[in-house]
Image (cartoon, rainbow, N blue to C red):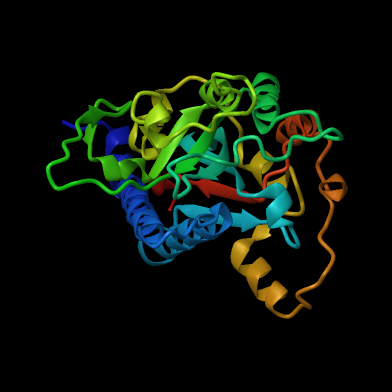
Length: 292
């Protein structure tokens, strides 16, 4: 007999949603690479958010999606704060940094943002964020690899469930793995050697469905309440509201600096984000189905 938590997970539909999204990303990237096109993290992230919002509108109402107005995609990319309700009014925080596999089968943007004036990598911010907040940080990799008809893939995820390789369309990789591979150099030590898909998958990855398909109410970690999640940064607005307002603005509007965001200085999430210089573009909140 299934427990109450397991029944809640099934009724929420969130597991099947994440599985479908991963499969669609996998196939979309394959199609793009077949004609030598490199997709962008921002475009795929927006498609995913639309899928989540449509599911919430027509099926469950479990999901809230927010964005910040006037963000610079080239500077801030597709950083995501994801909050998942594990028990009544208790949420786990996952900080996700999205990166996409290029048509050369490598991840070419892992070191983006590092410069003489900003001498820290994205993984440095994520490690610090984990340390000061108790959240879990991952790289969210968007993938797709063309396979021959006789290719065989067998693996199990963190929930001890088998999965097809298309579930790695959206994969999670720990920060230390990305740091190690991102700093790897060629034999002559003259340049960085960007990791391939096979360098990471499946050994160092899990499908992103594990975020919502496992019994997270049994997991340990720092928990946050809905009030904290709602008010840690006033720049976050419902993403549909942001999209409609920007339709009515000039395309050359000045982008807002991350230094000017309105954080709540008494909020644990805001305090940790400021210490780690973590300023995500998107926020997703996944609520339990029995709250409706």
